[in-house]
Length: 252
Image 1 (tube, rainbow, N blue to C red):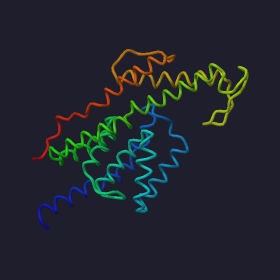
Image 2 (cartoon, rainbow, N blue to C red):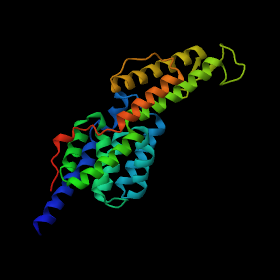
Image 3 (cartoon, one colour):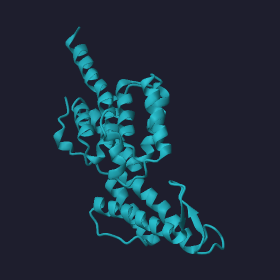
Image 4 (cartoon, rainbow, N blue to C red):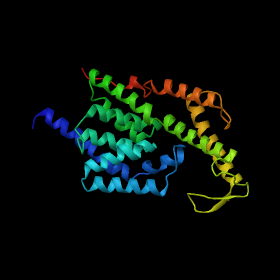
């Protein structure tokens, strides 16, 4: 076996062990409690289980579709990692280490040590031209899948729901005594309680956005102009590569 082939094989073996390792850790699930990108509800759990089952059975094309097109869109960092891993290994998609590196970089956004390690390992194998392409692909992914973008989209939906509840337009003519069924628990709650819960969620997500952008905090009753201004700041933020580029040494 030539040195080149042996080196490539060893690299692949190292990467091959990672999905098994990560499936045995809490990385894939603790992410949902730490960042306000949505709830790990029963539907999401079912999708995760389906994707992992497909992957384990070797149905890579369908698994990759679910990881990339469904779970990754929710801010699931493990799914984003697996999307990249399957690009790296050519599982269900054409082998593409550059595209894989971009997905690894978005997966490492929350600074999880496991994802940082594989990101760094892969980026060090890229030459300068490949690294430039990885940067461009990474910025594209950030514009769609960055936590800031996902949280801001959820925040906008919450604000729309809050406005509907406040004005009564969600159910025409309803009174303040109307009870609402909590979609998560199936338990009834008052309209006031429901509005207060949405307001708390809005504030939590808003605090996440302002802290990440390093700007002054906002109250939950955002105006349309304030929402637009936040989107402008987020657009500028995600257009910049921010994953400690100086630690990587490109090959000639």
